[in-house]
Amino acid sequence: MASRCRLPPLLGMLAAGFLLRNLPGDLLYALPDRWSVSLRLLALTVILLRAGMGLDLAALRRLQGVFLRLAFLPNLAEAVTVAGASYVLLGLPPLWGLLLGFVIAAVSPAVVVPSLLDLQLKGYGTAKGIPTMVLAAASFDDVISITGFGMCLSLIFAGQGDISLATSLMRAPMELLLGLGSGVVAGLLCTRLHPAPVWLRFILSLALGLGLVFTGWGLDMTGGGSLAAMTLGAVAARGWRQSPDPVAVAMGTLWTWAQPILFGLIGAAVVLAHIELAYVKSGLIILAIGLLVRLSVSYTAVCGAGFTRLERLFIALAWLPKATVQAAVGALALDLARLHQSGTQAEIYGLQVLTLAVLAIIGTAPIGALAMAWSGPRWLQQGQDHP
Image 1 (cartoon, rainbow, N blue to C red):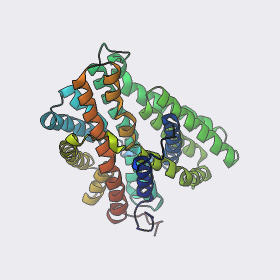
Image 2 (image 1 turned 90 degrees about the horizontal axis):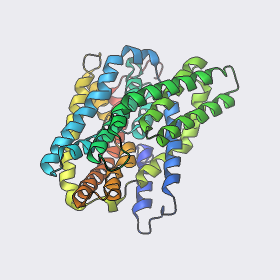
Image 3 (image 1 turned 180 degrees about the horizontal axis):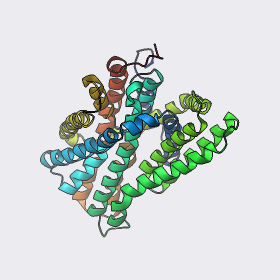
Image 4 (image 1 turned 135 degrees about the vertical axis):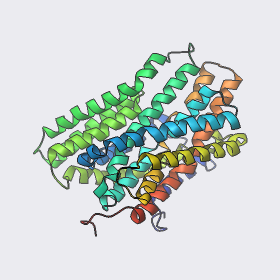
């Protein structure tokens, strides 16, 4: 239906999952949370491998300074802005505000990656390496957000469980190094099979990618797992040296079956019952302020790299969608407050964090996907080999 209306198909999938979860009777009640997470990770692995196989490593090296600015600056700026706005509008203490900021600041690879891959396949922005730069920065962005979230959580619940501040402080470098290192090793292992049958290389790359992503999830290093899967795809594709790579084509075919699972389950993660109406108005204002700052910083971060004004604006819009991290960790602070019996006030703060996480998914995932689908063909230059 979304395709017939000339809308990105993922919007229809998000809407279907949302309706199935929130219509009377909760039609998805029989689906255990563990199954939902596993299916979501499976589909996410497929799109991350496909994205890695499509990375232009030469362009990434050329744009490495801009790539790092895009990965770090908008995320940190939005996190600090949301923390300040939530202190003023909701009365959240600084630590709780920063925790909320890092939850909200994470971009969603599940929304950004397929949207950019679709544009990349049509040649939009490829001459300047725009899809490659944004795809790679998305994994780093998530690592930063999850690390900041973990540090704030450690400080808030210090002495009330197994949460270690030292571990949280080490999380970012650990995730980046382990993600890149394990991805390179797995990718090199895949290249050892060349020239092996396509089906064998496909199965091995998918199995290793799933192993990396699920291991990252099990170790609370979801950002590192995603980075590892994308790195695996990039290293393997470079070693196979085929264009178009038949394994990447096979991953694309599998993605057509996997994407309804991913986006349907992301839509189903939005539970209206989790929204506390008393916080909606203030929450929307906080989100709007944070997004405006993120847009401005993203636009500024990619200046000086030879991009046109409209290309910089597209990159800023591509940096808006939120879904994956918010769905995964939005309720964690509230759950810990209840588990440790930290008091009514801590539970109120946790409920505010959860409410804004849900609002962020509802407000930015569909708008971000629409913005990329509309602006990409209009604002990005199309390569000469894609008439």
